[in-house]
Every structure is written in C-alpha cells, then in structure tokens.
Image 1 (cartoon, rainbow, N blue to C red):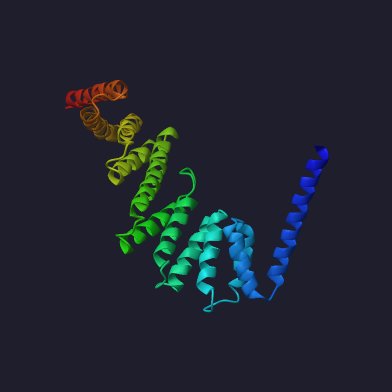
Image 2 (tube, rainbow, N blue to C red):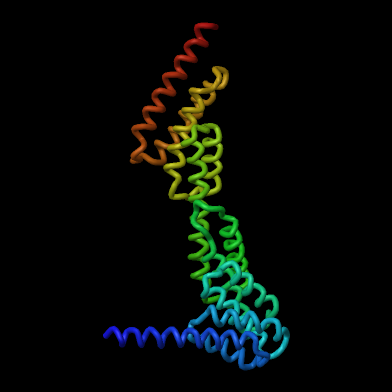
Length: 273
C-alpha cells in the first residue's frame, strides 16, 4: 500500500513538473497559434492561472488581429475566476470599449459590474469600490433595460445599497457611543433623511432621543430649554410611530425627565419675571 501511494505521488509530481515545463516553454515560444490553443485548453480544464499567463502573453501579439477578441474575453474571465475582481472588472470594461458591436458586449458590461459587486468589501471597510459597483450596475441597467440580467442587477444593487446604509448607520450610532452627542443627533437625522424606509429607522430614532437628551442636559442654560423641547418632540414622534417598541419605556423615562427639567426652568423664568 505504501509503495502504491509513493508511486501515485511520484506520478503526480512528475506530471505537474512536466506541465510547468510545457507551460514555460509555451510562454517563450513564438508559435502563437499553439500558445492560443493551449491557453483555451487550460481554460476549459479550469486551470485559470496557466491560461491567464498565456492569454496575457498573447495580448502583446494579437492587437486587432485574429483571436484578439477571444483573447481579451478569455483573459478577463481568467482574472475573474482567479479572484482578481478589480482587474477583471477593468478588463471587461476594456473589452466592451474595444468591441462595442460584439455579440458579447452586453455580457462584458454585466460581468464588469458583477466583478465590481464581488470586489465590494465588508461594510466595516472603506466603501469606495462599493459605490463604483453601484454606479456600474446602474449604468448597465440603463443601457440594457431589457437584459435577462436585470433581476440579478436589482438584487446586487439592493445588497450594495444595504451595505452602505449599514455603514452609515453604524457611523452615526458610533458618535453616540463615543459621547459625541451633537454629532450623533446631526448624523442620525441625516441618516433618516437619506434612508426614510430603513429597517434601522426605529433604532435611529431611539438614539436620536438618547443623544439629544445627553446633548441637552450638558448644554449651557440658554440653550438647554430649546434642546429639551426637541427631545420631547422627538419622543412624541417615536411613541406615535413605534407604539410597541422595546425602547418605549426607556424613552418614556427620558421624556418625563425632560418635561420635569423644562418645567423647572420655566418656573424659574416665571419667578424671575
């Protein structure tokens, strides 16, 4: 059994080395037709790294010539299959510009946008590439409104927009958690304006009340009255909109204390008058 296993391993290693040597020889070869056929063969075998190396080499020799369109198409797909989504998106966009009348032009533009979607990072990271992917998907939908890919495009757009929404929400709530209450109130209100139907609407309004309250009670006396009144107004909106909220009791306590403080301040004003 051990000898059999060693024999199999030896065959595998030899086959791999032969494959490497064959691929290296092809890269150095001037027979571009053989190189192209080998690259297509590697691609069909899903050996995308080998295929990509050969297609990349061939791009130097086939600009505007035979196989040029196929090379560009396969090369972009090799990038995608290898997980190089940013580069793949670029190559698909390049394909659609170079071959706008190709039967594959629509698919190339979709693949460019799709690779951008795949390249979008977790919501906790910088979202520049997410915004680019959204733009690319929107442009595809505008250019090919009847495409069979439209349901997919809409699904990807929803996912990417939700990612941006979550990012913005966590940034806004982050201001509350770092006790930057004024910034929290402003950011959370902006969030609600930007995403009026957000599933985080209840939580955002809850943090507006908490942030507004902390901001008010730590304000100068000449600003406190106005800010406490805003807390009361925000509670009224919250209680009307989310009657069964798990935060209602806590917000009610904040509301009651805000009314009490406001009454004390108004009482003092009446006494002074």
